[in-house]
Length: 67
Image 1 (tube, rainbow, N blue to C red):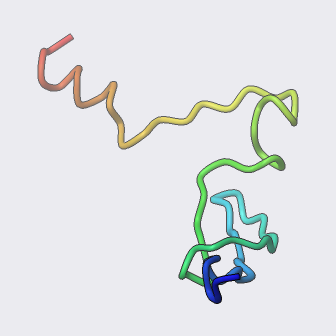
Image 2 (image 1 turned 180 degrees about the vertical axis):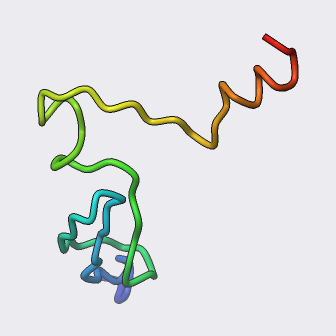
């Protein structure tokens, strides 16, 4: 068998924008990763409606076209 054919498998700390953190394993070189939505705040898992406005796209459209 060939040696070192598989990438290194590291522990990764994932932080959500809601403040939830958890640890998983990944082949990413980073030791921390940030996500916007996780199972603690995703509407499918919580049953609550959450509006995610990415950088005010609606407001930029209204300002640009005056609507």
